[in-house]
Each structure stands twice: as structure tokens, then as C-alpha cells.
Length: 44
Image (cartoon, rainbow, N blue to C red):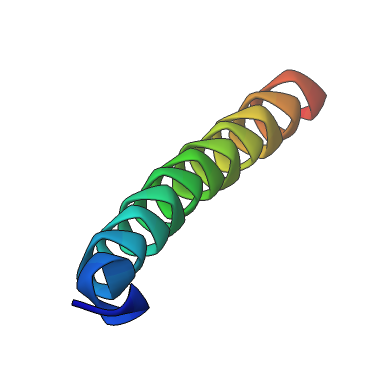
């Protein structure tokens, strides 16, 4: 067996990390939207 045996594991890890970062980024965007709503409510 050559070095290709661990490639699927690497792909799995990369996808897992990407998914983590995407969910973190989505949460950050949601927080930003909530803060903007709060600012608009406070201004009015």
C-alpha cells in the first residue's frame, strides 16, 4: 500500500474543518444582523 491510503481521511478532515468554519461564519453574520437591528431600534 502506498501513500494514497490516507487521502480519503485528509479529504474528510478538510471538509470537516471547512464545515466548522462555515458554521462559525454564519453565526458571525447572524450576530452582525442582530446588532444592526438593535441599532436601528435604538435610533428610532
